[in-house]
Length: 114
Length: 108
Image (cartoon, rainbow over all chains, first blue to last red; front, side, top):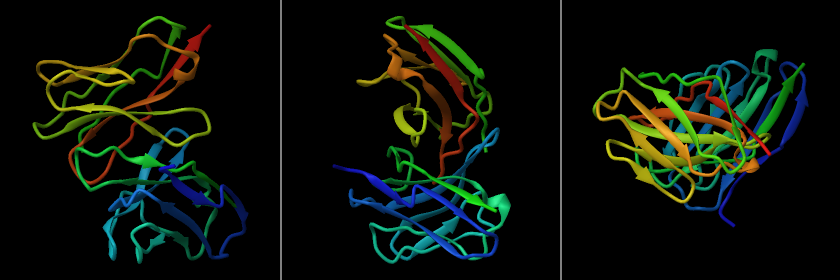
């Protein structure tokens, strides 16, 4: 089944403890991105990647890192999480960058930073 | 970035058509209009997109005004499963910019 998977689905952590949220897609998509969703603010893009070893900042990249060493994986790294990073996170992928391609979203990761 | 305006919420009865409006008065000539929806406790799901002409697919229809300053997503027969938040998005770069969307309630 074609899908985007994220792990973990739920995570509670403490301020300053490094964490990684994994994202993997099995559709051979070139484009991947991370979003966070907060009440009243909708979804905002954190980082995106147009292909292996190519990443770029979205609208809210502060406090996050990403890497794209393999086409299928795009982990989101929080080096020193803070409470304002408590949010619902979505990974998404599409065949290519650009206007014509629908994005497929993962099921979400709910992160709480105490 | 060009913005979209949608009503906060709408209601429909099951098996009735639903017309979800979206205003995008600052749209540029190269902006595509995309619609996504988010079912409860799930990630967003692609619905449809278009540039100038009306579009149909298995999920919905998209009607785009001649001046492109507004569009309407049409669900021809709403089902309970269509209850979701519907996002109208203008897309002309490498990112989707989501607004707050329209929450659609469907009653049996």
